[in-house]
Image (cartoon, one colour):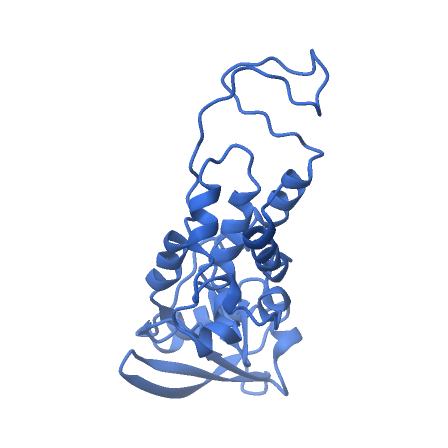
Length: 252
């Protein structure tokens, strides 16, 4: 790389839970370069002490999420050409989470809130072999598998949120979490809504009770930052609205 080659001006937050500051680096600008490529270059070629996370590099794990020029994103799927302003990048760890070091955050509070929202599947007793009205006799064989009618409203609602991979982007972009650290957050509530609509799950009553408190769905002001930021195109705002309706009117 010659001296005349274009360079990116990259400011990266360095520090830990006690504090830190932005450090500036010059990184070669390359075609089709992702933000994760930039971070990897800094760690491998400039400063090996830089801490960050990544795994799959193809938008499957979400572990590379950071705040890029003020917006939480997956860095592996974010091209520099789309987000760099005059060849400049500013990278920070995900907001609303404790910082372990540099760009790596502690995800424990995020997943603890999944648990508080009863985000684990609770299987109910298998049916007695009755055929749901949505199916004609002979459409399936009653056996060891629960029947999930593919055209039902519940299946549609569950499918809409099931693709969440727990990357934390929506949580980092949530205004309510920033104001109220006890708020369960959009990912946990989206997961709760998905399970509420899963006909195989037997924990609906307890789950609705768990998300009905002051830190639950009623704390949401519907700013829709979570929906705007979600890399998977999921609508946590809609899920939270569904939980509110479910608590008051019941989910059918």
